[in-house]
Length: 129
Length: 222
Figure: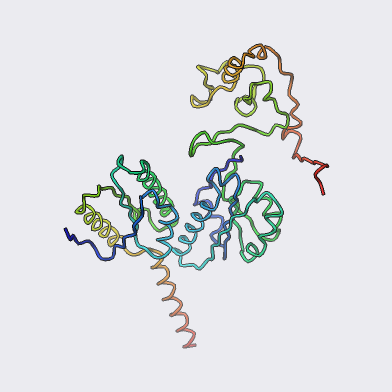
């Protein structure tokens, strides 16, 4: 089909969304990701029976934790599709991409940039003095 | 096992938000089994705290360690090199482990990261239930292996109260009446006549009523 989806989406393949742990989602944000979404099989048709249900629970848990630390829970999302729904895969990528663009960058990156700006300003003042 | 439950993240953040460096310390025993303070929960809490400080634009080192047992001085003291560089420790062990950490590292603030709840077991994945209150004078032989001290809201020792309905306790329809269970169990064991025996007044001095308790086993002391 050669469908296109936003270039800044980085796909990480896992055997099942049930493999994705809460800490994997959090570490992605620690490393600077602006958003994370999981694309699993349709609910009820998991090869491992419970994998995508587990993933959904972990996504919900991640949303709560990210809300508490100030990153924002809406930066994590769970999607479901069947293996034959490539157009939906591309659609979800666009949806998530648009959502993240609207939200702006990961607040940690903004805070780091602001910190560097202040440090540069601070050292500049020192130089003048 | 000792069953604990993680404190809300907001409460933990409030307790450590002014720290310069934080060590999240887990325990490989009970709290690992009840999924409150093992290496997995240590990883999640440490990652969440790092994100919090990153979002604040602050550089705070958040380390991770999981001890074999925090309720054992040998293991707690062995971690000295890893623990001492930090300015605060969040212990995800039960209240015992948290106190042992605080005793060993007297000048280091130790914050509890979990609420320690009870001695119990897993009914199913993700569900734990209380079974023992450590009263120090076990009655299970008289009650068919079901504890009225831990499982009866009133700790009654001679049969159910008037609030027992359809096998459930009056405090909640989700709580089994311990005495209903005991009678059913004695019936199944063919020991229903034991139900007629009066259990005398219990000596509560072996419980917390007698103050903090200690066990000394001379034959194993060094």
